[in-house]
Picture (spheres, one colour):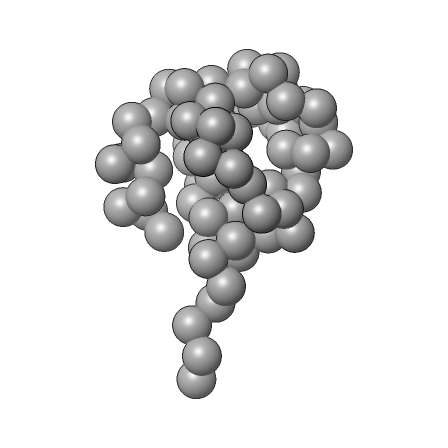
Length: 72
């Protein structure tokens, strides 16, 4: 069995963090300074996110980058 694509695993990790914080996608996107449809695409694993936006997401969700990547 092949492992899931990194984009899907990353998106699922973000979704878990967001749900733990009790916020919806729109609020998460706003905190990260991203458009809500772009943020939604990240969570669904259809966006190939740049390092710059990965850092924005981590900061917006108040999660250290190492902690974020440990969840993948």
